[in-house]
Image (cartoon, rainbow, N blue to C red):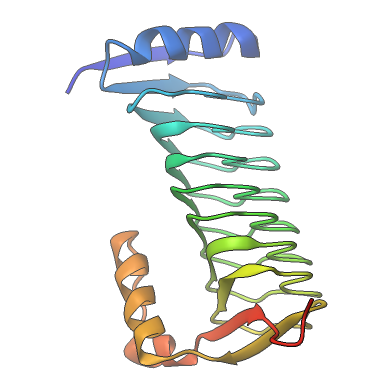
Length: 220
């Protein structure tokens, strides 16, 4: 595997992204040191390349990527993975509001807690939250799977249209048009396959305790 290292400390966002896109053509992996919470890192990247970011990032990391695999060793700001089509974003820490907003495909993993509106208007793909998620998780969700291993606060699944939210912890309240039910054996098998792939170790009892939030049959 060929690697290229970018020292981002003294770069502005445009310079950093220009360097990422130039070198993604020729290298299999790009390592970014000292990102200093810059915004829009790897925005619009279309190459099938691994990006390792050693530190925290700001807003819109990986927005509109198609194919890249991004690994962030610390935290992320709002809207990680916004509108990505394919690829993968793994955040070892926590993230701000709107993780996985509008994704069409691929996977966003936040190992810690995330803010509000997780998976807002997502159309497909998978979002996994290892900790807790804030209010209106799954707001206007149109498809895909949103998995939360911790608790969810108010208005989960607000105005959900399609897709499924799975919650292992407590759900404070459901939003408009959302209904909660028990998972099926097929749901549990699917969850185990997904979560094991990303290193989450749960017991068989944990999988039976997941709750499933979908659109109510009476919703418009």
